[in-house]
Each structure stands twice: as structure tokens, then as C-alpha cells.
Image 1 (cartoon, rainbow, N blue to C red):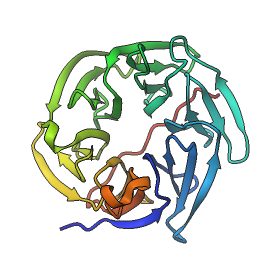
Image 2 (image 1 turned 90 degrees about the vertical axis):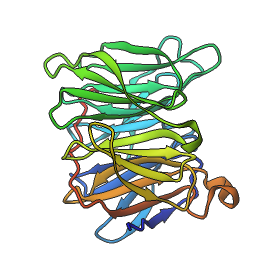
Image 3 (image 1 turned 120 degrees about the vertical axis):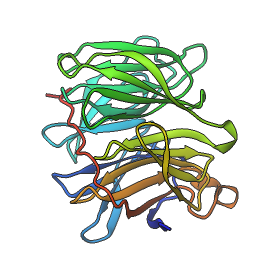
Image 4 (image 1 turned 120 degrees about the horizontal axis):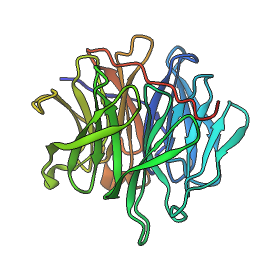
Length: 287
């Protein structure tokens, strides 16, 4: 039985988006509404707030030059170099009251990014291309969430949390376009909502469950291979990182209500995954 270890606890309201930065040997993650970006150094065990802004950070990618690309509110995107930020995109039409939620770079340097429903504006899934253009991939999305590519790069998983579904698109590695969406898995609403995800080198999908206090590792056909429990109800996101890409880093939410959400609510956990992850792709939107 795997026992996850707390490696940092900032009591995050919405701890999310852990991502391994191989150039810096650092694990980054965020607290979305607090606009805080954290860093963890496995070599020393040190961790700290790396960057903080007055506004949310919904997700981030790593650029080819090592900068972090921060996806914020109202369609705003900034690049952070470790000391200062540069605005890449100021806003998006019809996203004034919304914010980004979960993003992933693709093999061509583009980024798939979801935006939260806000008022009369529905949730959406966008694709941003390196040439500055973008396209709406899906609309009327009930909380867009985890994204992940298959090892063969022929499919993209996409989570719609409130619908209790994960979809699978066909992915075109030459154009970056997705098509032929199908429902890959549906989930019992009483067992928590599917949230963040990652895909390992065997093609298995790791799924975090918000209000489900667990991770599940599922085979490509949906069979549950492993389950890892946490002392936190809101298990929000997972990545496989570290020098060998075999450490599972898991961010949890609910840190402002630990009494009801669990002693590990809002913390960052780690454990030996027993399997390698896949290197994250780099975005090129800020080049």
C-alpha cells in the first residue's frame, strides 16, 4: 500500500497544476485563487513561494527557453522568467469574468487551455498556436479540467468535471488539431469528480478525484489498476516528475477548511510511482 508523504503544506485553497521543470530540477505548483506559484527542490527538500500576483493563476506551461507561461484571468497570459513577467496576451473576447483552469503544452509548441464558466459565459476549451492564433475546441463545458496525451501522441484526454466524464480526442501531430471526440470514461457522482490527470509511459491514466480523496491509475481501456488514498478530500492534480520521472507529485485543495477537508487538505504530496512518466512538452507562445 502506497503512503503519500506531505512535502509542503501551504494550506492552499485550490492547490493545483504540479509540473516538473527538468532544466531547474524544480517542481512548481500553484494556489489558483491566491495567485501563488510555489517551488520545491527535491535535492534539498526546500520549498517556498516563487512568485505571487494580485489575481488568479489557473495553470502554467514551460516554454522552450525555460520561462513559465502563466494562464490567468480574462484570457490574460504572461511569461515569467524568475524575476519579472511579460504579457503575451492581454485578454480574450467573452472571457471578462472567467479565468483559465488547467492547461497543457502540445508536441508542436501550442497549448490547450480550459476556461471556467462565469455568469452567462460557458466553460470552453481553447487551443493556442505558436503563431499567435487560437481556436475554440469545445464550448458549454462544465468545468474544463485535466488534459493528457497518449504516449503514441495520437489521442488527447480531456476532463469535464461537472459532467463526470473524461473524453478522448484523436490528435493530429502534424497540425495540432483534434477531432472525433468520444467519451472515454464516466464516473459515479457519489465518488468524487475527476479533476487533474497525467499519463505515464505505459499509457495508463492517473486521475485525481475532487471530493473523492484518492488517485486512480487506469489502463487505456478504463480498467482500474491502482488506487492511492489521501488524508484530503479534494485531490486536485497529479504529475510524474523528479530526475527519473518516477515520483508522483499530488496537489490537494481545501486547506482553508482542514477540519472538514482532512489534515492533508491544501498540501503537496509525493510518493514513488513505480513507473516512469512522460516528459512534458514545451510551449512556444512567448517566443
